[in-house]
Amino acid sequence: MKKDCVGQIKGKTFVDGLGPHDAEAAYHEAFRTFDSGATRDLDDDKINPEAALSPLVIERYCEYMREMRLMADGSKRSCDNWQKGIPKESFAESLWRHVLAFWKGHRGWTKLAESTLCAIIFNASGYLHRMLEAERDAPESDRSPCCGQPVRFDTDRADPSLDK
Image (cartoon, rainbow, N blue to C red; front, side):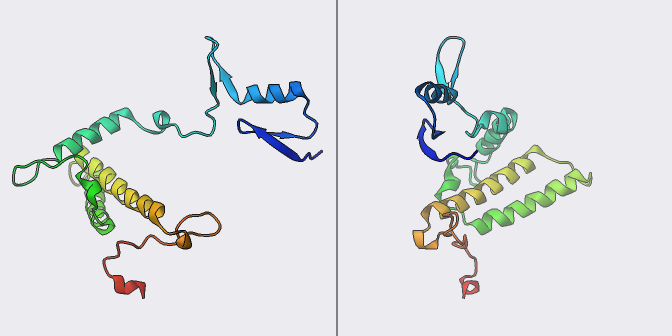
């Protein structure tokens, strides 16, 4: 039997016919209670970086980024220098070079270096960062009516004549 929605408490949807005890029980279902008596909301739909990422990989990647600070002239750039605005095309070109190096190493034709995988992470992350910035900065008129996302990501085109 389908019931009509009449409201929400802490993200839980309630329907017609809920009495006070039912509403209280549903309210408490929206929380976890620990042995200590402490309570916290449920984390069923939250992102979980601890499960999604490897601390070994993150640590090695940070070491790689520290190594890459040293420039050819001996000076050092900051680790977040890339956030100043590397074009997507530069990330894409470098990503392909490193993917080819990975592929050859994976096939046993060359020695596969950890730094190659870190460079792939760097370039893929940088490209994704630029895409997410474009989504965030896109005017409302450029967003799709169905999902609110921008219709295009071509803000960095190497050849703007392709947009015509």
